[in-house]
Image (cartoon, rainbow, N blue to C red; front, side):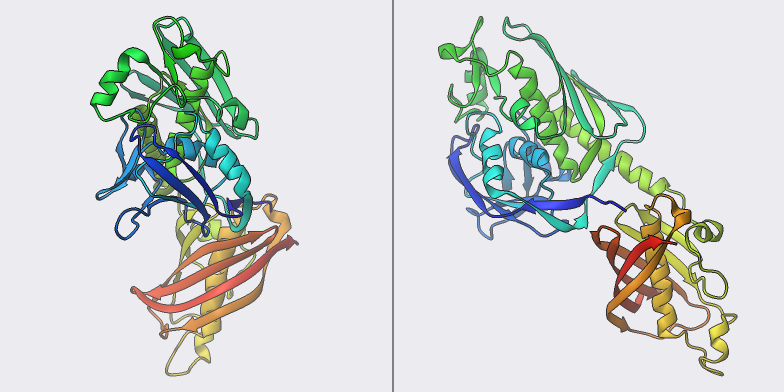
Length: 428
C-alpha cells in the first residue's frame, strides 16, 4: 500500500522586501509546522501575533489580489506564496509577517521559489489530504468561466484576452511538477499604466513599480521592460489560479480549465470544490454488515462491527457496535452482572480501524491486516447490554504497509475507551 505523505519545510527561512499593494517594508519568516496544520499566516506585528489559516473560509477581499483575514488581522496577496508552496508540495508551514503583505519580489513568485529551495522539503508521518474531482462541473463568476474535470494529476489550462498588441488572446496549459518553477512561478504580475492612478486611489499598488510588475503602455511596456516569455501574461494568470485554489486546504487532483480568470472567480471555484467534496462525503454510502464482511475476515462470534456511518478516505472512520445480552462472552463475564471485556472493546475498535485501512487496499482478497502494538490504552466506563459503542478511528501515520491509528469509543457521548494502535497490511 503506497500512500503519499504530507510535507513541511526542512528548516526556517527568511525573505524581505516591500508589499506590492501596501507599499510597506516587510520581513517574512517561514517555519516548519506539524502534520495537518496547513499553511498558516501569522502577523507578528500585531498584539498576540494572530494566526490566519490559508483557507477560502477566511477570504475577505479579491481586489487585485486575494486577502485573508480573521477579525482585524489581514494578509494581502497570499496567492504568490501559496502557488510556490503547491509547486514544492508543502502541506504544512507557518508564515510569519511583520506587516500586512508578503514581499513582492520582482512581481512573480520567484522570491518564494528561492526561499523554499533554501528551506528544503521534509516528509512527515501523515497521509496527504487530497481533493479529487470525480465528475465534471462548471463555475461562472462575472467574465470568468471555469470547467473542472477528473484527471490523474493537477493541471491548469488558462485562456486570457486583452486588447493590447503584446497580449491579444493567449492560452497555456501546465501540469503540477518541477517544471512549474520556471514555467509559471517566474511569470510576473502585470497592469496597465492608464489604470495605475485609479488603483492607487483605491489604496492598491502602493508599492508597485517597473521593478515588481510588467507595466503596459498603450503599445508596449513601460521603460522598455523585456518579457520573460512571449505569453508571460497567461502564465501569471495561471500562477494566480494555482495560488488561489490552494485555499481549498488540500492537494487538488483534477483538470481546471479557466477562461478569463480573476481572483473573485478563483475563490468562487475554490468554494465550489470544497462544497462538492463535502457533499460527496455526506453522500458516501454507509457500510452495512454484508459490506463489512467483504472487507473483514472475521465471522461470528468475533465480528464486532455492525455498521459504518462515516468515512473520510485515508483519514477517519466511525463505526458502531450494538451490544446485546446475546453476546457469547457475557456467559462468563460476569454471570449476573454482564460487562463487556475491555479487550473485546479494543478488538472492536481495531476492526473499525481495519476497515479504514483495508478500504484503500488494492487486491483486497489477497490482503489481511495484523495489529502489531497498542499504546496508551484506557478504559473509562463499563459497557453493558443495551449500549451502542460509537468508535471513531483516525489514521495518524503511514509508512509503507505499516500504519498507526488513534481510536476512541463512546457510549451516549461518554468516553468508554481509547487507544493508539499500530498495524500492518500483509499478504494472506
